[in-house]
Amino acid sequence: MEYSGNFYPVPHDWNEAFEQLKHYLGTISKKRVVIFIDEMPWLDTPKSKFVRAFEYFWNDWASSRNELMVVICGSATTWMNDNVISQKGGLHNRVTRKIKLSQFNLHETSLFLAKKGIKWTNHQIAECYMILGGTPYYLDLLHKGYSLPQNVDFLFFRNNAELEGEYDALLKSLFKDSQTYRRVIELLAKRSKGMTRKEMCEELNFSDGGAFTTILENLRNCDFIRSYSAFGKKDRDTMYQLGDMFILFYLKFVKNGGGKDEAFWSNSIDDPARRVWSGYAFEQLCLSHIPQIKEALGIRGILSNVCSWYKKGDNAKGIKGHQIDILIERRDQVINVCEAKFSNRPYVVTGKYLQEMYERMEDFRDTVKTNSALHLTMIAS
Image (cartoon, rainbow, N blue to C red; front, side):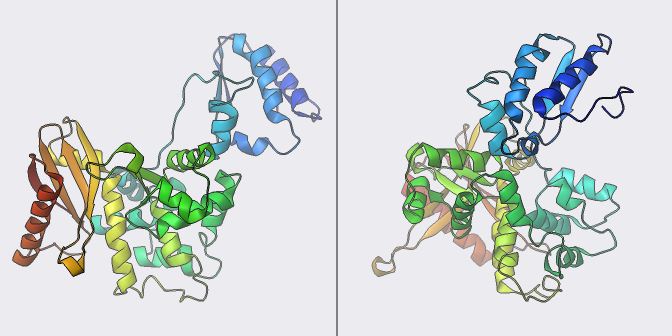
């Protein structure tokens, strides 16, 4: 109660702390009062009995005061879900509104960087997003006097870099059993097109039950993974794919990267591994901006489903394999066959490449037996 003008002794436990808060709030006139509890999961230390004390404070006293609003924040998604949102005890069904604070999209990231005085090209901003995602904390670490490669080297590859150990710290802060979540994340990082839950359980030797469902839901709630269906497949064949930009970059280039040159990113422009990563990361950027892509295509108001398509090849039988990563299947019987290309110069579609795309589209039509019109849609950085 530092700024209340009243003196209260240091409480012995959370019950006493909430009693002091009740006393202080009772001295305030009947005007609107907001109690803001930031990072609530960190207050619930072992043996603290914080949640039980808060339950009693709310149910016994605070809930009956119409002028009172309590705002609870927490970055540990699993804790917030288990102890507040989906709690079965004293806080069951007590939440009035849930607010999910999502990361910035690409446009918001551009505005944020401009506010910081960072003047980069659209291509550079897209690459920045492919590395850091839209997390304001990470974006705020960027130095306006550095180029993007210099910033990446400074944040990840110099000695004692700011984000060198961020991946481990992030998982430990979000998930109680962080090692289990790490295994799922790092498995998906190795399978770019994603995996079904059955495939993941077999690979990780997990039981395919409610506990694994909770893991997938928590990862999806954190926007670490996305789920999608391959074209024409049923729900049981749902694919799960790692889509978090920061984690994808970290696992590809930073994890187990000890001894790398402190200017690694500045000096790896022509690295084949970087080119492979950039193509995949740009596809993930596109998948996280489907509403914006639909807006640009003038189809935002048309009901649609985003999926992918994969056909396994067989050289012995002369069957050519094909893959389309982004399909926008529309209610008006049109399918946008999207091709995403990340390039630092205007992308030129050659006759040979166009012929390959048309062959892929016809193979798709013949395989899935669709009567919808197919529109080739190029998305370039």
